[in-house]
Structures are given as structure tokens and as C-alpha cells.
Image (cartoon, rainbow, N blue to C red; front, side, top):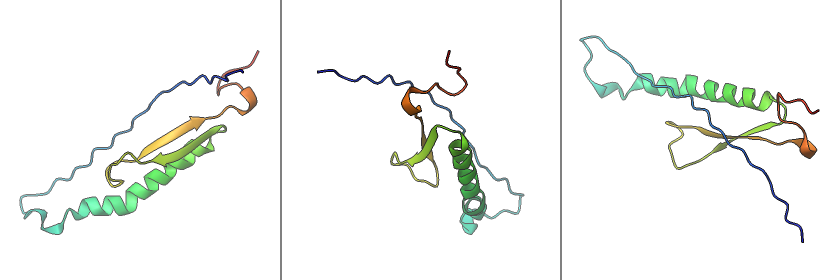
Length: 97
């Protein structure tokens, strides 16, 4: 009985975005409920995530799916990217010889 072994390689890449807002001396506290952050999460964050997925999926041989690790999606999005060589094909950027 033959056991088929799969060679697996892994890597990671992190983009971390730190958000902040500064207000003048007339600012009276958090009464607005951090509306600047809500606006970013409602308008910018979805476009950014869609763009990242579009670029990852545009590369032939790669798939990208969101994965949940118990974190709030408002605070963290983790993406599993997998390269699948079709029938033992060469990895991207490598030439078979």
C-alpha cells in the first residue's frame, strides 16, 4: 500500500492598519460614539477588503477565502490564500526545465 505524501510550504504576509483621530480643544468626548470610526468601517473597510480579495483571486492558481479565528470582523480579517498547482505544475515565477 502506497502512501501519497504532500509537500507543504507556508508563509505569511501582514498588513496592519492603525486608525486614529485627533480633535481640537472643543471636543467634548465620546458622545458621538466614535462616528469617525463607524464611517471608516462602513465606507472604506468594505472597499479595501473587496480590493484585496480581487487582487488575490486575480492571480492564476491562487484561491483566497476569509477564515474566522474568533476575532471581530470589525477589527480583523484573516485570509487563507492557497496555491494549487494543477497536475504538478510549476510554482508561480518558476520555469520547468
